Amino acid sequence: MKLDSQVLDLETAVKDGILGGGGGVISTGFASEKLDLKMMIEELESVDVPTVFICPISLEPMQDPVTLCTGQTYERSNILKWFSLGHYTCPTTMQELWDDSVTPNKTLQQLICSWFSQKYLAMKKRAEDVQGRVKELLENLKKVKGQARVQALKELRQVVQAHGTAKKTVVENGGVALISSLLGPFTMHAVGSEVIGVLVNLNLDLNSKSDLLQPAKMSLMVDILNEGSIETKINCTRLIGMLMEGNDFVSENVASLSLLVGLLRLVKDKKHPNGALAGLSLLKTLCSCESVRNSFVNVGAVPQLVELIPGLNNECLELVLYILELLSSIPEGRLALKDCPNTIPNVVKLLMKGSENCTQFALSILWAICKFAPEECAALAVDAGLAAKLLLVIQSGYNPVLKQRSAELLKLCSLNYTATIFISKCKLTRTIQ
Image (cartoon, rainbow, N blue to C red; front, side, top):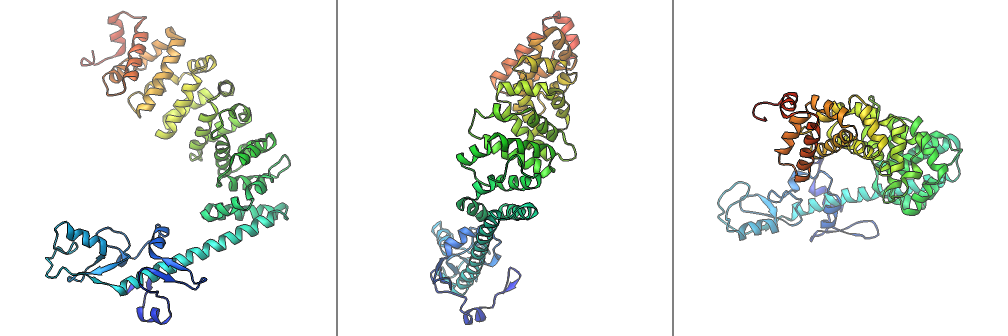
C-alpha cells in the first residue's frame, strides 16, 4: 500500500516493532510514553493524511475503522449513526447491504496508529531541536557583538517566524528582555532591524511594551523605519502598533514628526504597495489623538492621502477615508481638504461605489468641508455630480442616519440656487427628477 509517497509494508512494520497495540494507544521508545491516537490526530490537524485513512462519511481520520460486507471501511461511530437513521445501504456505493454486521479492521487501525505516531514523534523531535537551538542563540547573544550578533539575531528571527514553539521558548527563557536590551541610542541599524524582526513575532507583556516605549528605543525604531528595507519598515510599523495596543495615552508621545513622515512615505511607496496597509493602520491609531492630527496636517498629509484614493484597494481605502474624516474634525484639516483641488472630485466618486463604510466616511468629509466653506465647496460638489449621488443614497437600503446626513447635505448644496437652476446644474436624469 502506497501512502504519502512511502510504501507501508505491514509485515516489516510488525517485525520492526513499529506498530503498537489496539485501542488507539501506542507505546514509544521515549521513556515508555503512551501516545493517544485521538490526541495525535488533533495535534497533527494541518498534516496531509493519506486518503485511505479518511472516513468517507466524516472526511476525518479514522480511529476505530470497521469494514462492511461491501468491502468499504468507515469509522465505527459514523456508520452506526448511518444505520440508526434508517439507512441499510453502503454510503459510498449505495449498495443494499445483505449483512449489516461490521468487522473491525485491525490491520488498517494499526497502520493509522503507526503513521500518526511516526509523524507525531518527528514533530516532537523537531520542536525539541528548535527549543534547543533557540536557547543556544539566546546564550550567544549575551556574549557576541558586531556581525556575529547580527547573524545570531537573523537566525533567531528566521526560527521564530517558522516555528510557534520558538516564540514560546524565547518568552519563557527571558529572551524578550535580553533582545530588547540590544536597542539603544548607539545600536547599529543592522542589529536594530533584526531585533525588531524578532520582537514583532512575539507576544509582548505590558512590562516589555513599557520598556520598548522608552524615548531612546522609540527614536531608534523611527530612524530604522525611515532608512531600512521595506521588510524592516513594515516590521517597525507593526511593532509600534503592537506597543500602542490598549494604551490610549501613548499616541501623543510616540507620534514624532519623523514617524509621521516615515509612515506617509511607506504608504505612498508605489514600488512596495504591501506597506500601505501597515502604515495606514498605524496612522489610524495615531490620529485618534487631536494634537497628532494637527501635526499630521502640518506635514502635508491631506493632499498626499487624497491623491492616493483612486488607486487603493477597499481595505486601504476605508483606512484613508477614516483618517481624512478624523482630520476633517479640526479646522486645519478642513482647510487643507478644502484647498486640495482633488478632494471633492475624488471623494464624490466614492459615494455608492465602495462599501457602506466608505460612503459614510465620504459623506462625513464632504459635509465637513461644505459646511466649512459652503459657497465655494457646495458649488464644486454639485458640479462634480454630488446631488445625483446623494439622491441615490437617500433611496438606498443604507442606515437611516446615513440617509438623513445625505438629505442635509443635499439641502446645504441647494441653498444658493433656485429649484430650477439647481435641478439643471445637477444634471439629473428624468427619473431622478
